[in-house]
Image (cartoon, rainbow, N blue to C red):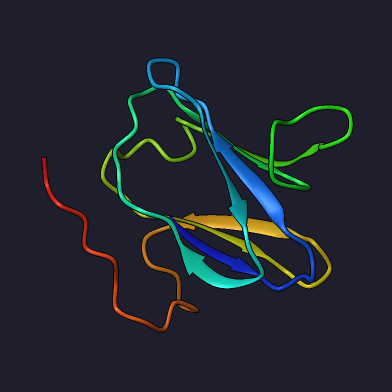
Length: 106
């Protein structure tokens, strides 16, 4: 996963596949990436206003689900613009300038 957070705030993301334990992490300011792994279908990825569990004080800002990104072995990117708008896509994003993350197969 690749992240570009152009705001001064930390956002959060959570991956909640039905068959795996939930994963919750921060999306720090700047351009970062986060590990490798293959999710069991179906899965949901939520981006929240802050790190931590989604709720009334931490609203969901974006939601990706299995039909949106059904391929099992694909990179996902999340981009947060300076005004807080969120975009997402598949593959290595154009704004990623370092070596491409290579995940082990299997």
